[in-house]
Image 1 (spheres, rainbow, N blue to C red):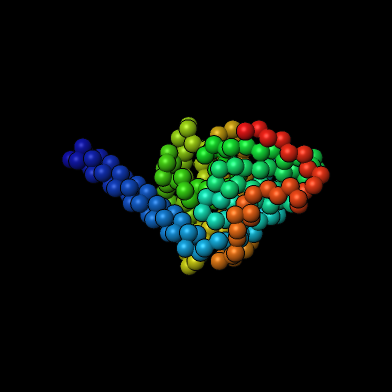
Image 2 (cartoon, one colour):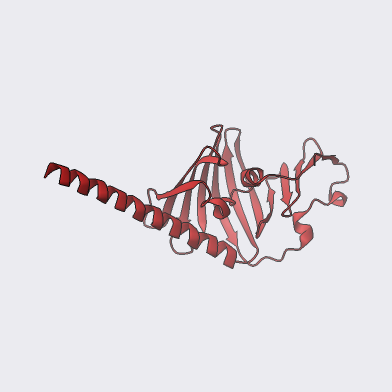
Length: 202
């Protein structure tokens, strides 16, 4: 009888864990679909790292993005990345790896969360779902915590722990849909930064 009870408990634990994983993936699937269905979006956010906090925005169009934090701006057109640092008046040009893109785009998790990550439901509230992603040794992050508004299915909070133990927190302040972007939106334009030194690292 004791063995039967132990087996039953083990089966129930596995079943509950599977349900939690399925629910977590459904939340992220819905969030990814919401972003994709929103057209070109502009998300205002506050980012906090060990170095302090800064306010900025990200413009998204599929895999392409621009992240502007005032003192630094990063453009990615799907192939090439330009990283501009205002105080140095320098732009580094690279062809980034998938992990490098993920580190620069806080919303990239919505395209890679099924690759090497285990998703489980976290401490959800009446207004928000919380999903916890645990990565393998080969992933860009050890852990990602995502909170999503239950009504709009828009992400409101992202906490990322890198493989080196560095923590980044993103709090969404605004979410604007159906923006008008062109190819030039996602590329560095030398004319706008005439004093910047361009360092091509490709």
